[in-house]
Length: 128
Image 1: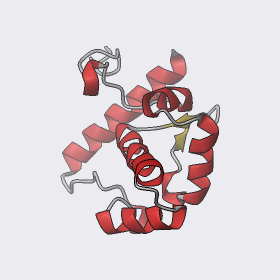
Image 2: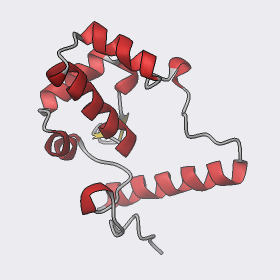
Image 3: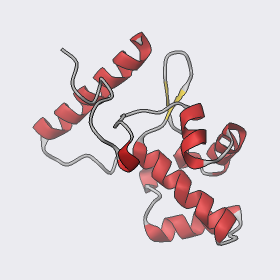
Image 4: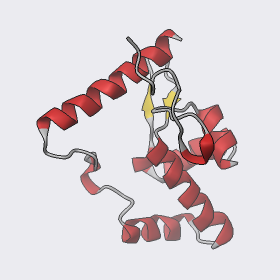
């Protein structure tokens, strides 16, 4: 049985349905950043590389979108260079040195449930 989140029900930010993963086209619309710019930023901000599906499509999470919006603000509104934005993000703690997942809680049951939920969402996306 599918959960509310897998069905796209529930409310996310801005009244949009909550989703675990977004494709690059959806992220481009949400953030107002062209897909080729997002791919370029992946090369400049190596830690930003999203997970990929079996068909090699990029799968962004909400936290990735939030970070993209922050990068966009730093580069376009505050006029930082790429290097300056990278440094500022590090200062803000947005870069996870060592690549660990900041959402690991240490509670094995809670961590297992989160991973299971994300895997189900990926399976639903690949099947749908």
